[in-house]
Image (cartoon, rainbow, N blue to C red):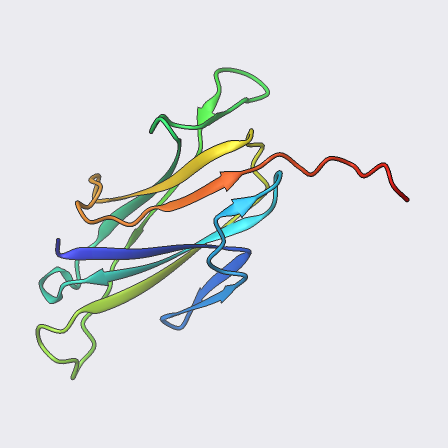
Length: 148
């Protein structure tokens, strides 16, 4: 595919000056709602530079069904984040070389039940055939200890 992506879960992430700054990256298990981040590095083929692309990260469960959260009014809504990116071809950059574009998404605590979850990435409305996914498990909080 002309656009590839590397995805990582982290405690915090920022995309600044063409680089990703990641704190507490690489986890795949939490116990309870915690703030987190998704760090993505898009690798774009030369011929797709200077072209606007869309991205969407969708949270799905172990059955590949959208995770929905209750709303104060109305139907539960799926959890997703979306946006656009465009990576330019800098002057003097070698023709044919891959271009990179970082993305960091900061998330608040999500009210998820124990189970396995996946952040699925769509680029221009499609999931890449070799797409990476950010898979994680929510485990029950530890039982309180009776000993003092």
